[in-house]
Image 1 (tube, rainbow, N blue to C red):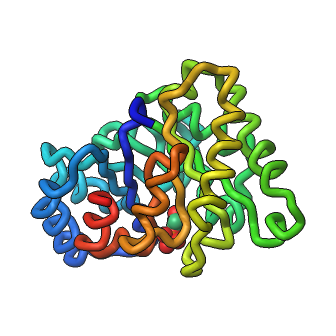
Image 2: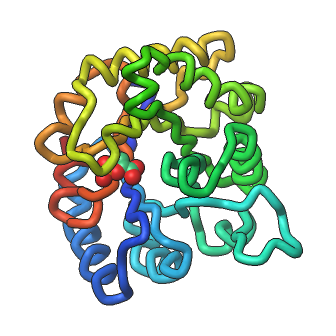
Length: 246
Ligand code: PEP
């Protein structure tokens, strides 16, 4: 995977306060020099993007949002547009996180529309896919991922070249259960195969689901795992830095 630089993204979810963010961000800035050959980013709640951009500007750590509107502007109360995120220097936007799919009814098509909105403003979408425990037990993993990816693949090669895919088995998110490196690799290879007709070998496929410093290197050793999307463990600077340094 030499053509794909490793990428580790923190998803703070709905955690944080200006004071605790300051501690976390200062810790990341202080430790970033131990991380080599790995792009690092944090996806913060909307109200803190100004704080994050002020702290991380010029450090080499990039930042993004956890969601994005599919609309450009207008009467969409509560939504945040790609241009607004751009205004705050966001390089990334998570789209289709399983919590948005399950708690906010986001469909596969909406997720692809959000990815397109991000791309139109020069923001790279991190498209999250993954099966639930019931789907995995029913042997439906590949089918579910194929279905989730289908409208995203329809965006075309030029768009795909600029996005990131995160494979996050729902049963591994926030549960302490991690897919084994081989289990994750098998799904990553399946996702890579879905992209194969499009000539986009540079697309990074991240693994997410209870990634910690103690399991990161064995996951990163797999040929189609290009990094991680990290929830809980991204809230502690030393732990997140150790993952990125793995
Ligand atoms: C996530 O929310 O994207 C995630 C992977 O969470 P955790 O690392 O806490 O399982």
